[in-house]
Amino acid sequence: MREAKSWALNAEAEAVARQANHKLYRPKNFAEVLEKYLRDVTPLKRNTTFEDAVIPKLMECDWAKTPMNKLSSHQLVVYRDQRLRKVKASSLHRQFCIIKHAARIAVDEWDWDIPNNIFQRIKIKKNPPNPITRLNDEVVSSLLIAAEECRQGEMRSLIILGVETCMRRGEMLSLQWSQVDLKKGLVRLCQTKNGHFRDIPLTPLAALVFEGLRRSSDGRETVFSMTPNAVRLSFQRIRRRAKADGVCFHHLRHEGVSRLFEAGFSPPEVASISGHKSMSQLMRYSHARLDKVCAKMSSMSLIGTIQP
Image (tube, rainbow, N blue to C red; front, side, top):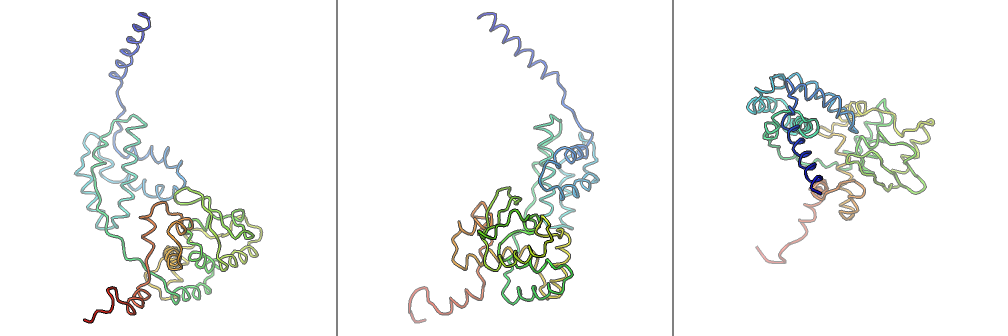
């Protein structure tokens, strides 16, 4: 027993000594951190498009090329303030999320010697969200009419399904026919923003659209053949023809969720369709149309029949 205790103490002392003598690797600058992050971490993520485009640009920044021992939070603040004159706060916040995550990974997983606290101290004040744009039937109809003139024949179906199913653009474009069950009237989503599977019940109109798409699919595994960029460019042309300034493709999903609430669906029922995991996220979409609210208010009194 005495020998075992002695061995344990010696082993612990040796481990402490090795740790004290171990020198953490210090990269020459933060661009080196970002380079390793882009090579080792980014490919493991489901969607790499954003980081593939942003990280090389971050690596070219002056602060990223500054020697690590001379990097200061002031340099990052100057960079932040300069970028906020050119991009939205939400866009810059996404970029700083990459920077902060790369710094944390370098310290926690790579045992690199970098001043992680410098990056974590940088704050970006987000602007309040823009007012939600509701699409009335006239706007939706004008978009569908304009889509009929589009060379991309799938755009009309995408617009209809954007409202009828509340799916995101990426969810629709990644959809395969093996996920569409027209007999049960369901679509099973596998690739979602939050990574969770969900089943979406189809309205009669959505089912008809899928039936038409299947007849024209020519045996293709995917429901749609368009790329995200092709959808973006096509929708911009459709929006111009429809004179629907300020409308973006994501507003179709907003409108679908809002119409589900107006149809009397409960928040859990809407969340099961939209895929939102928190009530705060979901309620951002539950915007009643102002004209309907005004019509209701004009025919009622909240405190009875008191005379003014």
